[in-house]
Length: 471
Image (tube, rainbow, N blue to C red; front, top):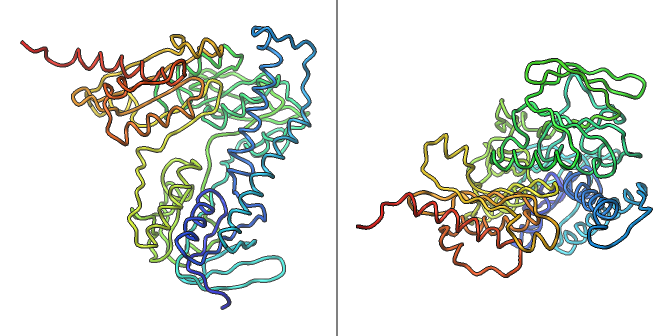
């Protein structure tokens, strides 16, 4: 056995690198192992960061090509230079992954490249093409992330049928693109290629897109994206697929009725599955949930083997980078004897369409199913002055509060800057604020965030109607 570390992290994605920095700052001798020499995992390399770079670039293109005339800026002759757009995306990824490596090096984290495998609770092996090494460790954090789910009837071929990674690097804009799955991945990447000129059809098995979001938000988003040109087939099942002459023919059942669709490209975005194979879980007896394939952990993110922890996409919960980062930090703090402060009910969800969708807390559907008494306040961005100045009046802010206490239970936004403004909702719920307290908090004018204040006021008015009036 060679070197010995206090903590060895398997995986250099959001959970892994966040844990590494926290551990180093707590004085732990830390190693971070990743199979790639470019750290950051899916998020930085082929997920969150490149997709947002493409979303921003495609929004700029659409603004120049279709929207700037309304502002008195004439942009005749605008054309798309796709290679430059892709090069910018790659440059953003290189810069941020380089910054991440420097961050870990500055914090004296030992960075190792290779395939890692658990030999025991306190021993890890790393393999490269040249050699295999073993070293001792006091703690282990498994943070190996996830990969896209492949449909048996529609396997990835890297050309006409692609996963989210493939959809980040098309060499040309497809004429017709089918997106299987109406969640965040499908809607975001579908939005990119729709703005750049593709005819995009989203195929969703469930009755609504973004199935876990508030229903009113989801219905409004579908209407807005439909106005932008995106087509939808909800409550639709894929039954067969045939690739021929560079095209894909999809056989579908929409509301039980058969239909077919021929497209140039298919993006399959139906979910992700944890990367748990080949790292020694079975050999050590680390429990895995048979139904979800997630590693079983306790409240401190420790597995069924003492000293081995897991975080991120390999454990239960939404596969979100910020959730993984928080879990990586929480696991390290638990190793250090601290009590982690991680509230899963306060993890926001975001869909980076235009307008953006952001949500935290309970949905109206969940509260209704539980029989909880609640009130809502819904304010349209069409009533917001800043939205009119920016020409972004589509969308709503919805606040849900407890009918008796008036404490805020859920905040759901569909509109400009929703991904940033949702943090007002996170802090309000965390602090136990009432709709009256948010309503009476002075918001700068004119700002998009005033829509939150207005929605809180409408919810407060509804709450007043539900209470008995004094005699």
